[in-house]
Length: 473
Image 1 (cartoon, helix red, strand yellow):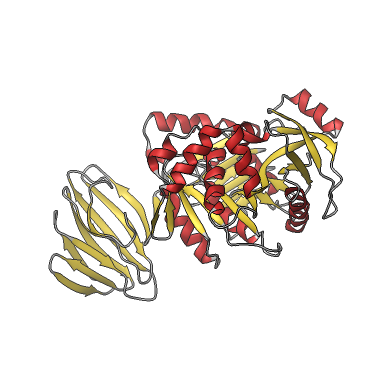
Image 2 (cartoon, helix red, strand yellow; image 1 turned 120 degrees about the horizontal axis):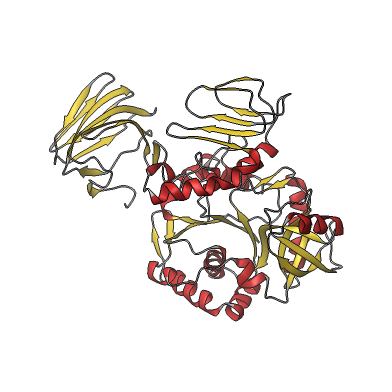
């Protein structure tokens, strides 16, 4: 079987302010009406012998990922939750050890959840070639045929040609991995034809990768083995043991295995690949108007050329702008020349130092039952727009420091307050006193929308005591 292992644990800070720590780029619709993780999984349709996917992600994203997979009709074999981020080698080790419980001779297709591939059929042919390599115990990576002297990617040097090609592609052994080069070096790599970009996609047989990890990085192997052995099932998720996984060394699969193994092989891939690792990359793959602008949302432009302009929540107007990135969200605006977008990391670092929420979450926050959007936040009051999905309900809870006033603006609400239960229709409201146990449910078939007004001495999200919760929080 061919088992997709989808790595969905990244934070995606290079696409701030659209991508945030609690809503990273793999969950965003960056190139169409599907999120990146949805596109990644839909791209696999048509591959032979395809098994259900295994997704490994940060536990704070678990409900959003589960919902996005449900939206496209994909039922994963498992959603594995990392208690902390430990880079790609431990993530792959945990997924492979989990799969080894079912079979040790499956092929594991390792895929980041947030890449763009413009030609899926070509990608399928590369996977076919890779499977021929795994049958001979190779650890395979997919090297991207470079189109420019890119300094933002690592490179892989081709070794001896491997006479095993299927799918019309010619694989090679791996001579060396090299770090991100300077411009002259990148130009020399491109001219030589012997170097490909490091894509971060891999194909291994389960037993082969586990044997190599046990030999090359025994500390990672042992820690992940304990984390999987002690893992617990929680609703639709598999929680790795926090203590064992936290003790695991952090390392990438490149450094941990691929640069050390004697079994490394590479399949060339020329399929319109882009890791969408910056706003410049999104301009590169996006549909352009006659002025070479990529535009999304409500915009008003005059004499704007070769720019990326995204309006997420309001009108964005610009005059006389060339080769710039302009990104607007409800709580932040980012402006940069296209050739300086990598420096957004300095802004994200400043936000973290200042402990500002704009680096962590959007004003609209996703819950397993719906969304909460902040309208106003002040010292002693806050106004929220709450949406509850059909049939869903919030936890049975109380707050020690705030009271709440609910006003139904769309749909029907079933309210539990203390020992009473009642229905609120549109334009009706109720008051939840401080310390009063309560619950909100949507009994209808359409989304329920309410306006919530919070008042009190402390309005933080951590002022909540749950008595019962459908989602195990």
